[in-house]
Image (cartoon, rainbow, N blue to C red; front, side, top):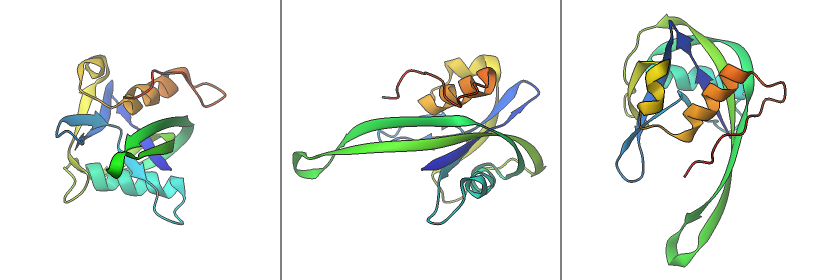
Length: 147
């Protein structure tokens, strides 16, 4: 279970960059996994500040992105994994943009919305933007599955 933020300001989207398992940098929404006993609302505040340096105000719950994948493990085993990601809309209320120190991301930056499709990004970015644009009453949009 994880929680993420869509922060759009002046036509630009705030993203954090992480390095995937193959060593390639990919852009993602600021956010991440919930700690045991943590409320997802608190997760978003903590993760956005950790990854970007910004303080945010949550302005709405946009919806849920869920996925299921099989991961290879040792000795030829496969692990069936299901992820559930809550996507909130947020606005910046304080702090200064900076990279995360000693965490899972190495950079945070604002990207013009029209340039996001050309970025090397995770599927969560597209799912989050679809939720932000469409604002479905169900809190769910159909987007292509992540690989």
